[in-house]
Image 1 (spheres, helix red, strand yellow):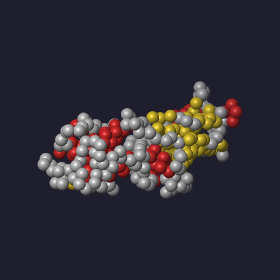
Image 2 (cartoon, rainbow, N blue to C red):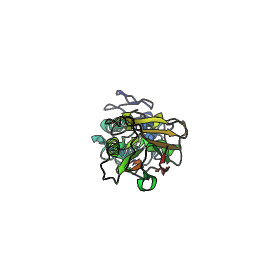
Image 3 (tube, rainbow, N blue to C red):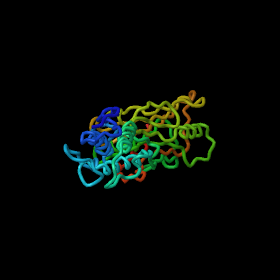
Image 4 (tube, rainbow, N blue to C red):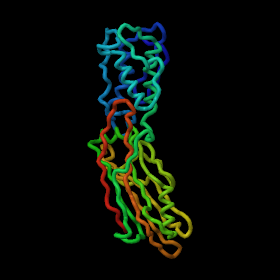
Length: 322
């Protein structure tokens, strides 16, 4: 039985390191297996940060009385080794030096090799949700307020981008895996010198993409609420407010907020952008440039792990002025 230090797993199954001379028992194997299975299984809730929904661990439970072997039986060491190697690849993390090379039939499983699996498992568990910045960004939808068709605008422009998943598991998995959703605004196709339009061009350029990950919102400027997918409710909550500007345009603001369709079992996220052209020192100068609002989607990168993730469908409302 393992006799080394306890390896704590918050919210999971604590493991115990082995020392030279220890005999690895089924219970030792199953502790590590349970944690790896939790990472590779479907998320159990919105707040489950580990689940990647890849079908679970590839090896069965070790049962009392068996010997831990390399391959070919429940409790096979190398199958568990392959699972943690794939998880490491997905997270872009280095695999413990002692388990880079697969154990094969005839090899003796050493203490460092067994501990390598457990310590890598703890590191990936403690990583929680994957960061968005290893994912791939695209702009799947776009709407434009075209001044040649719609006229110069003043007041408030609004558009909503909705990201709809097949089911709750796919939604929670997407964010656990580093996926994110959001929105972007910009003044485009403008070559004039109107100061109000140029002020909006600068404001939206500074703001850039506003997008929400599992536990955070990212934006280039403004006041960020720091909310993530785990914080969403069925009413709109502010993700970012970017107010103020150069006088006399201090009453203008850009606001991005979001909601889900169900708090405990969400299948869609709606992200709304509102651009308010307020009173400008007693006047209300219109914006003369074409104004674009578009959806932003960050798709998890499998990074050689072989993992796959189901992407959402994306829809967007036309831009309206109120």
